[in-house]
Image (cartoon, rainbow, N blue to C red; front, side, top):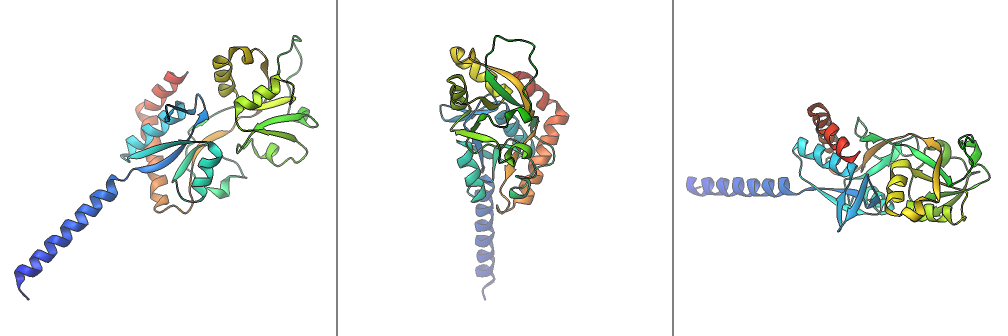
Length: 251
């Protein structure tokens, strides 16, 4: 065979491989971002914004991985992760219930508090509402959310499921539920944005203080490497002080 033909064929094969590699390398990793959980993660003009959004972006950038953050409702986000349409979704509470369903990075994104909210009362000095106090009461929760294994596994709890935390707090103030379970910083943000509504509810207890993660699809192609890269990126921004700077901006 003519050496020039072989050489040309090899050159063309190398060109194709390089072109394909460039194309694959340029494809951003698609990660779901909850669209209604300010100040952690919400959508503004269709684009993700929030404390968790900034952390996730910074971690991927530090790892050198191009990503596309897709804003969508949390329940839909998690379904797309389960189907492998998205590589991951945030923000997810990690406990024994969710542990086997997803792949997890080592260090959590952050720690948060789920508050027990009741209607504003004129009485002061009353004991905080406890987990046991919720039994027999109508409890407002949000569709698709997890509230820790103790609550989620307790079938005696009378749940009233709403499409959002805002809806749940509106039900609370209207007297349709006795308590609402909402992360405290989320409730504070809602009170700030809806001042009249905010006067009608108050923090009356703490349900649990979970760690929050970016949950990854178990069967997504190359997921082990993807999780490792995210771990690396999170470690970098913690060491560099970028994590602390982002946290300070959102306080």
